[in-house]
Amino acid sequence: MADHILIAAAVLIFCGVGLGVLRLILGPTVIDRIAAIDMLTIVCISIISLYALVADRFIYLDAALVYGVLSFLGVVAVARYLERGL
Amino acid sequence: MLDLLVYLLCAGILASGLLAVRLKSLLAAIVSAGLASLFAAVCFVLLGAPDVAMTEASIGSGLSLLIFLYAVHKTTRSRDR
Image 1 (cartoon, rainbow over the protein chains, first blue to last red):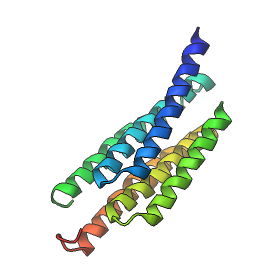
Image 2 (image 1 turned 90 degrees about the vertical axis):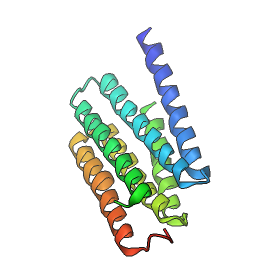
Image 3 (image 1 turned 180 degrees about the vertical axis):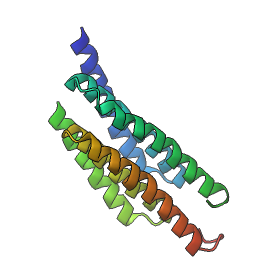
């Protein structure tokens, strides 16, 4: 049962990475690309968390934590740059 | 399964690097370059180096993106952004 859940999560992560990169390539405006990059960061956090669960090494969750803080900071910086310039 | 994920992330690194070179808008190119280092950091985690991945994520993706944004803001006029 747990294996099925892990495989379903991996398939969903594959789809998320594929669709996010597709939107990044196709995206007509800058805002589309920034939204795609925010989504890809969250997908990357889920990849790291899933791998920490599969490999049974919970030290990897620290990397996911740094990722979460940095994705928030990056998107806030880009939004502030778009609004009135850093 | 893990090999497939690493290959997919490497394809993502290639795609975002190509986009960073090819895109006309400077802001989109900067963010694409940040995404390349983000994918590289996930590859580092999957290959078993979480400390390298933490450094790559904080410096390559966070700090360099901020510094590039600051430089672009300082060196362009506000209307031809």
